[in-house]
Each structure stands twice: as structure tokens, then as C-alpha cells.
Image (cartoon, rainbow, N blue to C red; front, side, top):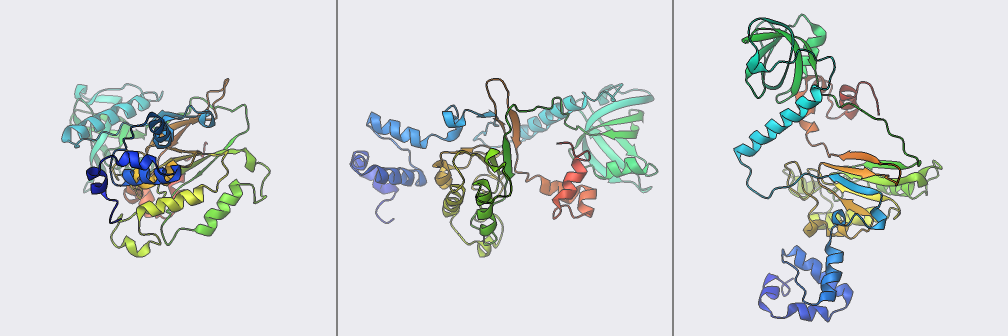
Length: 394
């Protein structure tokens, strides 16, 4: 560590030629070291370049190889490496409103749609789609919403005498995009019903092959609270060593959705709860345990708020500088958070699209949606599921 520093590579000529004289395993180690030091790898010999690019190339850019023939990244957000400005937030909320409005417009029960800016006179039985920009309780215990769309703003009142509707309104949070069935004037409308932009399942697919996918997350390697015994039992389960079912061999995909490691400096005093205090070593431990899983299972991994990437969503792919050990696992595919991945596609079947999202925003909803907050949903995830998936439809 005292000798091989950035200055060593910058100041000594022909270091690449010297590295090429070393055994291949040693070359690989120094290549990782240069990545860790933040240096670009430039090898002169064509053969070495081909070898290095093959090792360095992320699985996400090499998914057409045979082992990933049935895994395809459908969508990953573009991560812009630029300063975030006010205009970026404006574009985000505008695009978000438009997308959710399009979903709401597909609901057949929403009739007489009117833009806020075009509302005039005393109108009955109309529908407005807007984003909740403000919410408060009046002296009469009614809920008053301020809503806006791309054409204007309006006040909308929910009467406390309508308990079912009032409960819906209580669960609204700022920036929710909703449709309201209402009546009233340009100054104020009175809400008769609230409709949320529920995702509609247009087609129920069925694979011609009986194939399973497993999902897990929040492994938090490196934490003192990492449940090593349980994870090893999970590995034994995937590897068929625990004979609980004859269908284990049908599991062909494993999704690990965020917080692979516990990270370092995520919250004050975290170092007291860390068994491994170096984030790179945490990923080494993660790769060691994940590497025990049988190799015919494709493992798709996205980051979370504890991982060594920015906390702002969308989050980029795990940084190779820290998570190089995961990059070296041949059956691992790394994605952004969120990402959309297609699995189990065959010549005659289009496969299933799987949305990966770690879910850090759920913390906000658990603390701000009234029914979730009152039922301590932060510690009871089934409450969150019951609230958002009342029909229990897969």
C-alpha cells in the first residue's frame, strides 16, 4: 500500500509492459487495484485488451451470451451525471403527471373529463384529474385539497359526513395523482368519489414451461444483524439440500432486490453495528455467500439505499470499484434501481416482465399515509400489502 499508489502508475514508465510479464492471476489483481484507485486501464497489447475487456465488461452489456439467452433487460433509466436543477424537478413532475393521467383515463367509469382550466359555471357530474399540491383539515373537520393539472389549480372539498370517501381522502399524500368525480364551480368543487391510478392487468400470461423465480432482498451483508445461518439455509434450499419440495430444481431465477450490503456511514453511529467496516469487504462477503448458489440459477441484483451508490432514485448499477466481487460471478446480472427485466422467454413465448424496485419510498408512505401510520405499517409490511392490493390478485 505504501509503494503501489496512484503515483506509482503515473510516474513510472512502462508499468503496463511490466504488468504483462506477471502471471495472469496477478495481472487480474492489479487490474482490480487500478479500478479501485480510480485509474483507467490501458494495455497496449491487443491480446491483453481483449482479455481485459471480457473480464471488465458488465453482464448487463453481455446478456446475449448463451447463459443469459432467457434474460433480457427491457428498460433501465438513464442516469445523467450532471447537476440537478429546478427544471429537472419540473420536468419530472410534469412527466409523472402525464403518465399517471394516461393510466387514469383508461378507467371506463371516469366520464365527462374536464381540464381544470376549462371549468366554468356550475358543473354537475364531472371528472377532474390532478396532482394533490396541498391538503388540510378545515374547522368543520372536512378535508380541503388543492389540486392542479397542466392548465390550472382548484380547491376540492371532501365532506366528513361521507365516511368511506373521507377515509380515502385521509390516506392521500402530497403529489398523489388522482381522479375525482365531483360537482361545483371554478372556485371550488365537492368530491363524490376518488379514483386512484391502479395498474390494470391486461393479459394473464402462462409459460409453456413450469419455471419458478425466487425473490429476496435486504440481505445487509456486513451488518452484525446479518442472519448468516438463515441465509445459508436459503442457499441449501435453492441447491436442493433441504428436501421440502420436489420442485426446487424448477427455480431458475433469483431476484435480490436492494440493500445487498449494510454500507458504511448510511446513518449516524452505524459503525457500532457493523461486523465488516469496509464496504468493499462487505461486497466480498456478499459474493462469497451468493457464489454458493447453484450456477444454473440466474441471479438479478439491483441496489438499494444502503448500497454504495447514490441514495437518489433512480440508482445506478453497483459501482465496480466497490462491488467488483459480484461482477466476477458468471451467473449474476446487475441492474439499476428500478429496472424492468424479461425472463423465461422462448422462441414461442414472450416471457414475463419483472419490475425490480428496492422500495425506499415506502418509508415515506408508511409514515405519511394515515391508515398505514396508525397501524404501524413500517414494522408490519403485510399492512402495506393489504392496503395497496385489496383484491390479492397476483
